[in-house]
Image (cartoon, rainbow, N blue to C red; front, side):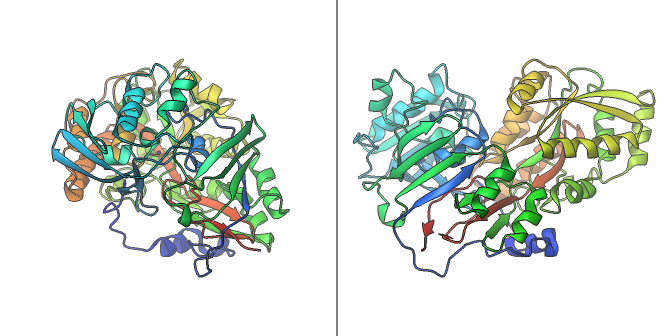
Length: 520
């Protein structure tokens, strides 16, 4: 999964999209479908979801695909702006750093959880302490700088930090900020994996694995007059083409994260609205730089020069994306255009680096990948491009869960062709991928000596200009040391049925349904 001042944008999102996709998305409509209509209350929104949830407890789940099903049920302490990811008030109506290592949250009054439990400072302390200490929590790293949490008033919470951390407001707009009912947790043995109780706009009704997740309107929601649907039903349809066909047929109202190869199908469907926009979803090759051949920086750099990113975007994303030269897209506030110049496509330079590293011609790279159609197509392009510089890439494929664990946990393979779905604050992205002991550092290998301190500097101040400078150093360290091979950012591509109004994409690329209503 904080980005606004974050965006000094030269182009509007609409202009950027037009340049990126040209006439290919001829059915493209505005970014706010139905913005000129008057919202109407009623109806159940039917969504084709591309994955079964890993858990309905935000602390114990781990899949990025969970978010779109968690957001309706769980309000967060902070929220984020759709276009920039800049944090804004949520369940915390305001926040302030009273000093660099103290974050004070002023909580919103009059909020209750779905089971009637009062939302207050004690509930927030309970949640954050649980995220930090619960053995099954996957959020310990997110809150690593939080030394203690205290209820300093009925509706005030004070976080004492081990070091300055300006990223926390953004972090608290993600899973770590999703508030669950303490009463429900205690009643269910500390786990809500299948019985979610939050404080969001919709309450849980039922979940049938790999089939359907149903939730209904929360009439006691503190913003009930801004939520129009009677409920949301998620049909679990992993095959994205099938999910899209269900919208064309009118069985569902929304299909999201549609692969670009389905764009012609969408264009032929006269009854669909297409919504798209930039995201932080980065397709990349993860290296294990603890072992040969990627323990040699020359070989890591060679791959970065060998990839023709423009061609990759055209061939695998049908233009619905942009080349990636670092882990942040060009519209992100912390993007550094100078770092983006480090690895222009240069197969001659790639061959020279491989020769300098004494790598034999047609050296075999053992890479890890996935079995879905889009991944296979990406692999074919990578194999073809690496062959041009004298590398013979071979992929071992399996399911996302299986092969990600094989590379990141079991340390199999030289590299992994996968994606990073992004986080609201970029400091968390870089910390999770490039810290020595991070799960996403496959070899748990040493990082450049200056990188930990550079990462710390990105969190010292809320001043966006100072943070931008700090991130420029982090990005340069990562890319000059070629710790990753970023390839492309995939744009969001969603299909809406004719009844859906008020839907907007967001930079995180994970749909929310805050202002959505149904007509007809």
